Structures are given as structure tokens and as C-alpha cells.
Image (cartoon, rainbow, N blue to C red; front, side):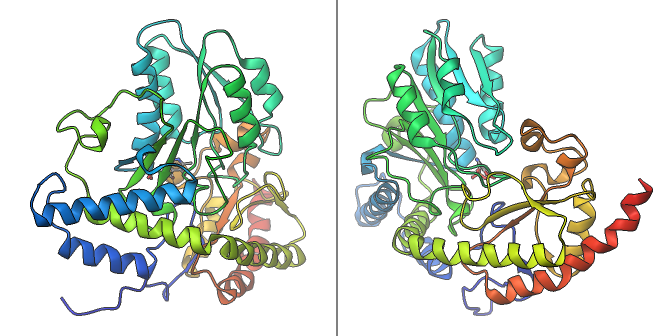
Amino acid sequence: MADRPLLPDLDRAVYLDHAATTPLDPRVAQVLADSARDLFGNPSSLHGPGRRAREAIDGARAQVARLVGSEPDEVVFTASGTEADNLALLGVMAALGPGSHHVITSVIEHPAVLAPLAFLERQGVRVTRLSPGADGVIDPDALARAFTPQTRLVSVMSANNVTGVIQPLADLAALTRDHGALFHTDAVQAVGKIPLDLGTVKVDLLSLSGHKLHGPKGVGALIIRRGVKVHPLVLGGGQERGLRSATENTPGLVALGAAAEIAREEGAGEAVRLVALRERLLDGLSAAVPTVYVIGDRWRRLPGHLCVGFAGQEGEAIRVLLALDEAGIAASSGSACSAHRAAEPSAVLTAMGFDPIRARGALRLTLGRFTTDADIDRLLAVLPGIVRALRPLTSHA
Ligand code: PLP
């Protein structure tokens, strides 16, 4: 194979779909390549290569812990954000054993939370699903009203993957603790983008995923606060303190640690840069297309996350996406997982009170570490024309 620098090949496209996944940071790519070559030992082996792999994994564990303000021994590595969510929900309920249990969640959760909860429901667990307001925010008062004496677990995401809206995590977690239940948050979209400190926010379980923070795909972690009982889903050799058996993915975990370290060091400055870029994008778009409106709370959102609709032209997101793609710009409608069902209205937007036609019209533009001013210029040069060209089409509909 020819030598090639480990830089993401972003020349061909303007990539504005960071909520779906992020390109590897070249520094992380270097760590991944180096550790894939050098850290081949089985971390459970006692010999030198094994010990070196083990030490590297422990270093990564400490880096991930530092990013979220937990202790290293509270970090359980998994093979994805999805697996972390499943371990949190199914693992906590399995550890509780049989009984008349109640779980509270929200209707806007990712399928990685909704599907295991639907599975638990079929096993007899009662599940309450809170709806957001029109701003996409879950109201802590609605949570307060939903508790019953049987409530054992609450799961509300830190930030939504469609709208980018950030949830009032500290309030939701504190309320849950007051009611004697455990609080899980799917922080896959939030980690590395906004500060999260488990030292001050009383979250008991937190899921994160490497590929959303310029780390590799297929690695994630569940942070489990000390003392919280979780039953493993993957049984075997007892790795990850018995909570997730399987020979560790050493290069992936070490790269996740590197991605976490970079996010911790550069996250605050990067958030300021992304908010400025996002606002420039929105200002430029509003000037050219006055019908544009922001979906979800205007300010309570992830720094690089914009979800917009075009009044009177909803239902056409798929046409916009195809035209953008032709112009070399990658964006998204609802979430990547539902892209193959783009004709269906987004469940998140429906829950926010959008009618089915408007719920099909969302355009998600998500920025990341390698997004530049020039990328925003290119988008602003083509998107208004694309939207204007839609008008005659929709007027027939
Ligand atoms: N949770 C949220 C909010 C997400 O956005 C995603 C990915 O899109 C996941 C969970 C799943 O993470 P992974 O792709 O690592 O399984």
C-alpha cells in the first residue's frame, strides 16, 4: 500500500453531517495506526506485550474518565454507543431482578434507547415516555409528575441527535435522585462538544461513542457510577471487570482515549469557533431565504448543530439533500439511522408538535472540527438556489 498521510480526505466534499459521524482526527488516526501495529499483545497476558496493551488501555480509561469527570474505574468500554445504552438499560433492570418496575424515558430518544426499553416493556416493565415541548426540551416538571413508587430508572439523552437541543440534565438527574431512582443519559451526541462533569451532575450511567468525537467507529463506553449494580450482557472471560467480556479492542480504545484527551483540551475553544460558524451559516441563510426557521430551541443547542425548515416548502428535505449531494455537500434530514426512511416524518419532530408534512422537511446541518469558513461559503452559495428551485415543485403538491 502506498504511503498516504493520515488526513481525512475532505477535499472532495463539504461535510456537514457530523451528527451522523465525524472524520477521524489525524492525530487520533496516528494513534490508531501506531497501536494497531505495536499493541498487539492480549491485555490479559502476563508477558511484556500483554502488559503494554493493558497499560495503554488503562491510560485510555483515565483519559475518557477525565473528559466526563468520572473515576477511571467507573468506565466500562463497549463496542459502540448502542451497546453502552443497551448495557445501561438492560443491565440495570437485569440486576434488579423480577418485580413490578417502572422506567421513565422520552419519546425523542435514539433507537439505541427506545428499542431495549420496548424489549423490557414486553417483559412486563412499565415504561412512561415523556414528550418534549415545541422547543424540543423535556420539562423537569413533566418528569416530576411521572414518578411512581415503582420508578427504578430514568433515561433521558443529554442532547438530541435530530435537533441538537440540550436537555436540562442537572435538573432531571437531581429530581431522579430525590425520587430514589437511577439516572441514565445517552450522551453520545454531547460528549466532547459541551462540558459534562459527573462530579457535579448526578448522573448514574452515561453512554458515549468514539465516532461522534473524531474517534474511531465501533468503540464506546458506559460510565457506571460506583455502587450502581449492572448485570453484564456479554458473558465470557470477564474483561472490563466482568461487565463486558471479550478480548479488548486495544487500538480502538487507545484511539478513543486520544480523541477524549483532544476534546478535553480543545473542546471549549472549539465550541466558541463552531457557534460562530453556525451563526454565520444561519445569518447568511436567513438573508437569502427568509422562510428559513430553526427547529428546536434557538440557543439551547450543541455548538455545531443546526436543524432548519423552510416555511411553505416542508416535505422536500430529500430533494434538498439530493441537490446538495450533487453539489458536493453532505448534509442530512432527520437522523442518519432513518435516512433510508427519509420519506417518513421524523418521530422527534412529530413529538415536538410538527404535522407529518412539516416533520419531513427538516434539514440537519452539523459542523465539526474540520469545518471551515470556506465550507460555509460553499453551502451559502448553493443552498438558497436549491430552496428557491423547490417552490414550483411544492406548489403542485
Ligand atoms: N445515541 C445517539 C443519541 C446517537 O446519535 C447515536 C448514533 O447516531 C447512538 C446512540 C448510537 O451510537 P453508535 O453509532 O456508536 O452505536
